[in-house]
Length: 277
Image (cartoon, rainbow, N blue to C red):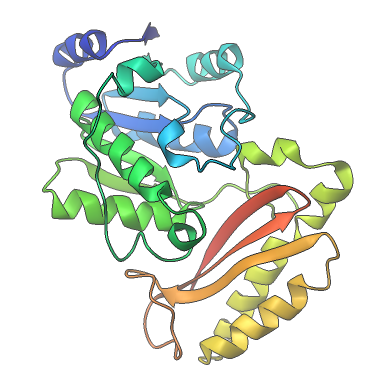
């Protein structure tokens, strides 16, 4: 496994790779969700490149950039065990040099849900992913379904800007009790960790209601909200039943839809989603 820190280094190595290249962009502090992406990339490509970079541009001024968990040595050992070929670990100066002033704004789909709650977040996400795609030139890029809106935003950007990578979505990896794996789960106290299962319970309720034939999106939102409010440590940011492609809120579920939510458990903000079949 080769570890590189500069754009020039990774571009030189990329030119030497033969066959397809799978790329997994991460912010580090890896868990089984990330490793599922690496495994899938390994299975489908000749070589795998993983980036580890905590992107400051996608954090708001009152968010947890400084406290975001980091453990590079552990991450590298996990990636070595998975047979990763190249790990790109750039610095802020490498990714955002002095006088950096070009940004990627994806309209509409980036303005709802997380975009409304975290202004500027998806501008930061789209810009860094566009930069990484330009640098790495992957055949396929792998993302988790857990960040459903991020997936929609990146797919829209790739289509609109005629980018080359195939965007591959890997199902959410969950703990035994349903909690979606997330680097931010480490912030939860034991009591908060127990309370956090309310997100999965609310999504499971939405899926069951839909499977039972319910098409009234507002009725499902109300029942999800009522369930979450039974948990004293939970504070709702949003509960959504939206078009799976555009993320527009639905009144009637008459097309592929996704239930998603953002809930604070104590001071930790968690997101999750579930496609409604």
